[in-house]
Structures are given as C-alpha cells and as structure tokens.
Image (cartoon, rainbow, N blue to C red):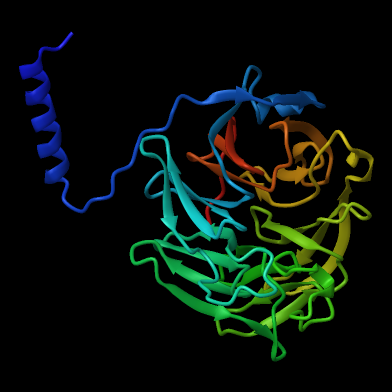
Length: 346
C-alpha cells in the first residue's frame, strides 16, 4: 500500500503530465474485445475467407444505430456513424473509441421532419478525405479528415432535393454512385419534405452532373463495386422484396445490363433481425452483404458461403487492416471478425 508521501508525489507527476498535454484530446485504449454472436459455414470455400476458429468480437457499444464504417488505411483506424445520434466516431486498436465529428450531419436549429439527422454511409479516399452520404442535410459531401470541413458535391436531382442519401461508393474515374431512400425523413415515403416521387440510385460525375441509375427499387440502401469496377451492387432493404441487384457498367460508368443477383426472402423471419443493407467486397470479388440474421458472404454469382452473426441486425460492414478484418456496425455496437482475404484499392 502506498504511503501518503508517495501518493502525493504520484499525484503531482500525474498532474504535470496532464498539464504537459495542453489542449490535446485524451483518448483511451479499447477494452479487451468480448466474444459475441456466431459463424455459420455453408460451403467449404468459406474457410478460405473466414478461418476456422475465428470469432465475432464486440469492440464498442452504446450507440443508437451504428452505420457507415470506412477504414482509413493511412492511420489504421475506422470511422463510422451513429445516424440518429448525429455523431461520427473514430475507433482504433490503439486509441479505442472517440467522437470524431458532432454533429455529423444537420446542425439545426430546425429538425422538423427529420428522422435521422446525422451522416450515414462513408467512403474513405487516399487523399485524406472521406465521402459522406449526409442523411440529415440530404446531400453528398466530401469531408477533410484534417480540418473536418465539408464540401457539398450534390444536393439535388433535376432541381429537387434528395430524400436522404444513405450509402455511396467511388469508381477510380471519380464517379460516385449512391442510394437515396427516405429513411432520414419522418413518415418515410409519406413525408411532406419528400420532393422526389421515387427512391433512386444515382451516379455523380466529377463535373457535378447527377444521372439516374435506377428509380424502381422500393428502398435502395447499401452499394458496392466489384474489384474490376464493371459491376455495381445495390441492396434493397424491403422485407417484401429483399434482393441485391447487379448492374453491369461500361467504360464510361453507364449501366448496360441489370439483373437480380440474390434474394433473401427465405431468410426473413422473426428470429433473423435485419434486411439487405450495407455491403463491401474483397479483392477476390466476394460480397459481404448485411442480410436477415447477419452478414451473408456470397460469391460474385450470388452463391452463399457463410453467415456471420452478432446477435442483432447489422447495418453495414467494411474490410480493414489490409484485408485481415471485417468490421460490422450492428445496431448499438461495433464488432469485428478475422478474415483471410485482401481488401481492394479504392
């Protein structure tokens, strides 16, 4: 047991150390991860993606609805959002969890008609910026990681405001593909703020032009590109039509063919929370697609290989650590699982 004098010395040293940090933000290391959930293997090929013995681990919790993870390779950390909480978080194995930006979306003062005021999907770029699907402000923006300043890239289609952009992905030629369901608006499709008669999938070109990709999906949500960038994947978060659509793209990024890649109707039940939502793709072309019950891992042809469960609905997922880890935002928590795969270059 420490004597009084030793305690005083240690207290003085601690105070001096804190003072030396000045105005620097203090962060705290993450607690040891807790095993949760389960992993189901449907095909032997799954072992080459998620190794036998891998476990799902809880990294952080306490969120309202965690979403939109994006891995920042340069700093080895994850950014993700809490959309109704209007907060963008940062997590790393070294520093643990911290608030990166609040508010992440709409700053007020009028929140009338908004159901989810924060930013939603994120996409990390190599130039120290992050693309945001800003649900609360109903636009697509670019965020500087250093300054935390936003640059608006698009807010309207044919003069009408977007519903509430949800998720996005960028092609190497600079084109941004994004989805625009009404989840950010109170009363969803019946919102008086809704200016568009449909829920669209769009392409935003580097020159600022916005083009329609599809206006026939009821609730377009997660979006991803194949490694060769010739196929665009979009999830439809509708229990009545829980599908993933694949769009074949030409060299200019225009759609030349569309088809239903996979259907999750057989997975929709009371014991399997969630719907087709966010997704990511590894370097080999496997889809990690959130679905009823967890993250469904599929081939590029839509064949099911395995299912990763956290015990609750999973909104989105992202591959990080140079392909070694799948991060999952699952309702009120952030989780991860080890992979044997590689990420693709953005």
